[in-house]
Amino acid sequence: AVASVTETKLMGFTQVPASTADTFVVPEGYVAEPLISWGDPILADAPEFDPSGSQSAAAQAGQFGDNTDGMSFFPLSASHAVLAVNNEYTNYEYLFSHQGKEALSAEDVKNAQAAVGISVFEIKRNDQGQWKVEKGARLNRRITANTPMQLTGPAAGHDLLKTAADSTGTQALGTFNNCANGQTPWGTYLTCEENFNGFFGASAEGFTPNAQQKRYGLKAKSSYQWFTQDSRFDMSQNPNEPNRHGWVVEIDPMDPTSTPKKRTALGRFKHENAAVTVDDSGHVVVYLGDDERGEHLYKFVSRNTYNPDNMAANRDLLEDGTLYVAKFSAADGEIKGQGEWLELTHGKNGLTEANGFQSQADVLIFAREAATQVGATTMDRPEWVAVHPNRTTVFCTLTNNKNRGVEGMDQPVGGPNPRAKNNYGQIVRWWPRGGDHTGTRFDWDLFAIAGNPTVQEGLYAGSDNINADNMFNSPDGVGFDNSGRLWIQTDGKYSNEGEFAGMGNNQMLCADPQSGEIRRFATGPIACEITGLAFSPDQRSVFIGVQHPGEDLAPSHFPAGGNSKPRSTIMVVRRQDNGVIGA
Ligand code: FEO
Ligand code: CA
Ligand code: CA
Ligand code: CA
Image (tube, rainbow, N blue to C red):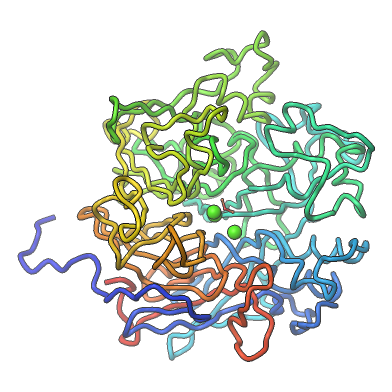
């Protein structure tokens, strides 16, 4: 394309200041309205939300789940769509009248299991440009911690996936701690199982997790207590059940009777999101972060190629392919350099029986250990990955890592993780060599190093594109719109004090990947995280998740105000002049 002399800048809005208010703030000329909050009814027979904390599990199973997170927009027409949304976990301090201070009853556990998973629902846009939920619509569906699912791919049917209730190792129940997401070009939704370990516990006296359970954070004590009422979550009775979680799950949002499929070819770890792109060769490439201090960044390359003329033929592209993990390198003191994708295939790179890997199923079920075996780089908590719409560059948020550089942690300072005790986070960017997403070489730099220039110096003040007016900490959600604006959401410290002074509540920012400029676009209410974003294809509406306002009983009454119970809520933002968001 020929650049015009009157070319407008990518970002046209006036940024908003940092905020500590209990509101959702957007730039001048924009409006933000709640679409749906935790407990709003989705299914036809579901009741209205009862804030008393004594709703039944059956009521919750027909309502929007708690802790809205990653989401995707599936258009049906210009003013009609399906939204698929993750409900990551639930806040016992608000779910139960006893605030989680008592031992859970069997009904409490069922209620919590119904409050997580996925919510799928139809939405329609009216003449005023407002989107509304269509309660009871044909495609509306709740997927919970008890919904039947199929395990597919190379690990399906392996002994490590078999349980007393499922001798086939292929029929799992449920999904939970669904963090962020992905969307395939063949119209399916990908939901990523992240901190699944927190839902398991062990009743046996003296239970101690083995090395593999430890690597995945599994412990006898469990904050969610499900194992006390549901033996499936008791590792002393069902040691293999945790192996059936920690996967990417593919869901067809257009068929509410379809069985979700856990895609074992994409590896088992604490999945953050699944950034899907189709390489020039037709292979589908999925970039995947494992959000834990010192864990890794992965990519999957499909064996078969995408067929744009036959959507049904693409249905199982994620069942078979090659998993890789990233190794970054840099010259001493440089924060840019080269990288390599190391193949995680049984029999290669030391993934052998001699090293404890009996099969490809072993490699995938214990992908973290495989990544260590091949020498992958330990990262500062890889969160979301986003591929630029022109497919030349890929971005990943590294949210923070207090263990970086700490003695005995085996997480040395350097490369894309350049700061010890990293409380602010950074965004790494890479260019696949030759534009080939299936290849093994790339070049990288840091797009932004978050920091606080008002109270810090050097690298802790942040990169040149961070200043007193746009500073933030802990970048997490990240995504591109079709025009190439990069949107950044934060899940950080909101104390607004000390090293976080002046940053205020969690927020959403917009960046120009070319110039590096970053502007604050929105600020959230008290004690929330901003996570989850989806644009309507016309870019006139953006859906933004406000997760856990008022967590740990912080004084929020978002969104209804007054004395109301705070509720996770999806906000829809549009422009008063109906223009393109961000332009
Ligand atoms: Fe669910 Fe890593 O955030
Ligand atoms: Ca996140
Ligand atoms: Ca986070
Ligand atoms: Ca969260």
